[in-house]
Image: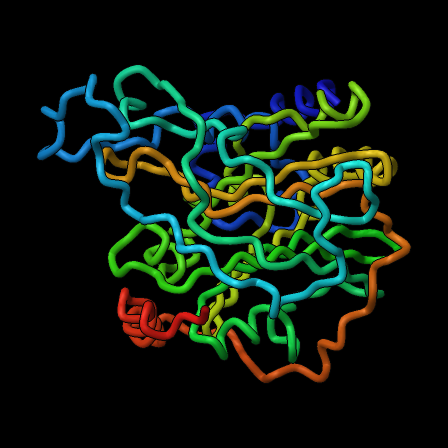
Length: 341
């Protein structure tokens, strides 16, 4: 797998690649993108900006002394949500998921600008409510429009959902869909800005931290655990529906990502895989970084995937930017009054 990454690196000058990442690549360019290079660049401090007013901040100040941009959510009763995969904390169980300890993921600390230090992540910003496992003869986009899915049920309860739809290409297309929920989006917070921002902002910030706690050595080495800016590695499409934000992550848009996925998918029934999603912090005020949510998947069985009923959808379409003002209003702290017990 290293040879695949090295070959891709030789095709583009790193400086040119940085410029190219700001524009959407053509179909012919998609396969030339290099996930290995992006992995390394995504977590250095090239994009980090220290606001002038905060330059004099004490670099030795403890992370615990600073107020986070977002507060961890109160625990909710998630029993009303269900998905194709069942929840089971026993990693020996098959075709199931659980939530890994947030401290197992390293994120940028408050002192990152000074020493590039990282710390174990604090509590998740959103709760993982359910995971769906879909298959079809074609790629599945905007799966959150499906009637009765977690995002629709959560919206009826006044909650907000982040939907991560990992699209796996092949003769049969698969979608691994994770639903993260919260009662409110604090107005002005990084999470709210991510929900209601434009696609350029989202692509420049959304990161994935992968890990394979249990699996063969070659798979663990191929996947690694380096944070990756998804919008620079693969094509990401966003749908801002009523009460939810969905990101459709097209793994097939990158030859390197597709190659790694092919290795993983071939032995997926033997693996335990962790995936954490976070919003990259680019300024001092946004530090330390916080993880949106994470999932641990154990021994997933492709044969258990089901065909979703996307034709009989709720009719939610992608909202344009003019609708974000309404989203900002409904995503304020006032939503706490809508939360369910």
